[in-house]
Image 1 (cartoon, rainbow, N blue to C red):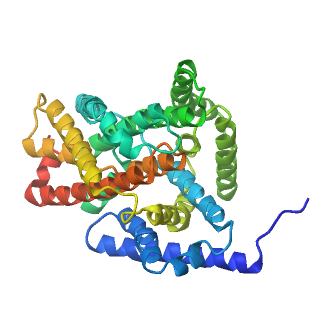
Image 2 (spheres, rainbow, N blue to C red):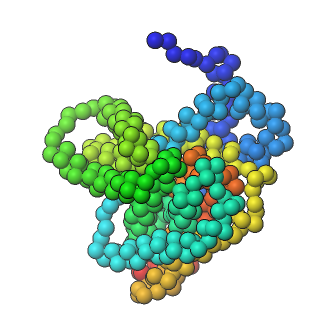
Image 3 (cartoon, one colour):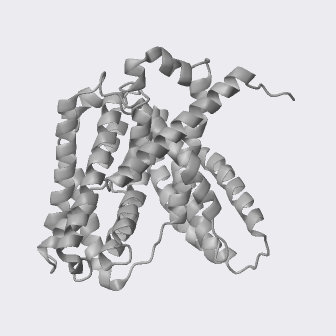
Length: 412
């Protein structure tokens, strides 16, 4: 069997494109870190300046020569896009913790309702208003409605975690509550997104099929914990490098198998990361994580940025309206639910702003929904910009609160 290969010039063009994407993401990421902004925002900006609103706008022939020098180059680069998403979710699953202290459960439950169901309820009345401007080529109104509501409520674990690390708050009770709530919320929203994708791909996807997919997704998440308990009874003697190879092999196999049951690769990768973490008591995936965050994930974010187009196919008015509604609904939902609990007003404000940081999941939501044509480029750009703005606001606000009264992060 002989496989088709790229010509020498095509291979060189692909390597050059990867260099430019990676280097631009690196430089802009460091620049944004220098102004105390999340690195991921800089990595997306690194792609943005190369895309339709940057290099392509001013020098279209040069941009096409770099990223579309041969017919299939876009598809080749798209492979790295998907690998970046897969490894991002795999590492996110690996870093997920489900350890909830009794003292925090009441705050977590109130915060979850306030950050998820209240914003979704409020957002429901605005779906028709945005549908005409934001509906994708798939023309699936049900999928669009689900994605719209997820976008209103989503919170980022990776970005808010990075903010907590940078500010030295990661070990505080406040950080523990926010991350625990975000874990439950993300699980719920990934399930809803999985249903939206299946509906967009299968026009005859019935209500019963959606219900089955939901229960299958929930069963997989909680079933994994039983699998872990079962496998932990056995003692495996395996070298660390073999463990890494087998973990990644299993990752790709599980993605393929679960795709047959309409489970999205993004969620499959998250589940595998969670499984591997709970099986690897004496191993870690630091090498995989380090390489992913050094290559696949920055390229993934840069490729997201390169697709942003604020010159054409973008409504600044609709963006402002959506961003304002999403942030206000999330903030007010959290703040209202926390009013019945005894804590300082500064703590309530901090919780409400932190749950507004849409970061990584917001970006994943936008890129996945756009890839499956559930939303158009207008909404895709609005979602990314909303994600970047909300994450920056959370970072700067928490920095301000820490300087004002760091005790409020422990004395809730």
